[in-house]
Length: 334
Image 1 (cartoon, rainbow, N blue to C red):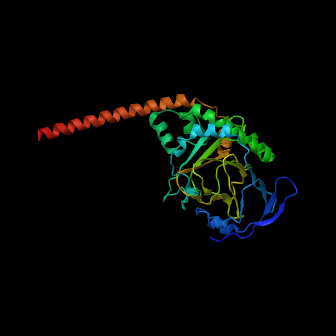
Image 2: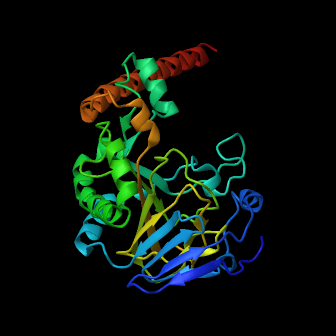
Image 3: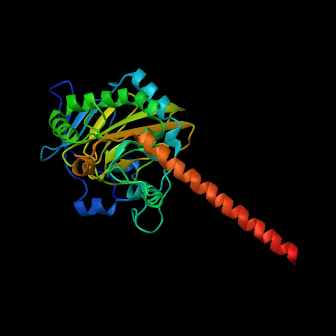
């Protein structure tokens, strides 16, 4: 991959927060070609570690970054609520996980990435359960698995999500207002915020990718929770513009996730140090598909589905036992 050259057009330091204007250092074709590839530190000419605003040459927000603006109480409480769940792995992150074919047939890398809040479609397994059980899905949109199984823990996470939303509103009022207006069209949004969904990434070095499925007029809102030993790197940034950001606990980053972005490696790359990133956003298809779908009783639905699963398991066990009994009898006759 090409090394970064100077992307900075200008820096306005006339106010408290420096404002950068940056140019593309990779062509659109070069940027497309690095998707699904991992970003190296040499590709970021600038790594921001203090408050900054960054705009492209056409005046669009690339990122707005603020240090130490989130409360320790909200961070610690949220982490306690999600710390066990975030270790679950998935193979559904496609290009972001470094899988060149995305979600198409082929190698799909396992990463610890999960979703909280609401989602705009049912999984293949969930759809199969509905079909086999005869239970009707309540609509296109659903509660995420975490919310179904851990509603009390979710209450410990929402204060942090609301603090993140407040930063978004303060720093990006136009984008926040448009996104909030869209979010309010459906009950499947996190109450008191412009978000529907939180994606958690645990020690997950994302390859160069663009986020898909989020609100087209909005920005991604990224924060990090750190635990364990100290580490270096893990910069989040935009290789086309040669700009990275060192996001740490308590910091807030609003970023244009429709631009190609990714992370440099965390050093050392071990679980002795924990970097848990939370990306807060609005799913566009939730707005499109679920404006008229009411919220449903997620725990009641899960109890019905679990009853079906239990009955199916008992029937399978009985059939297996019966088959084993027949086999033993046949052997005895011989």
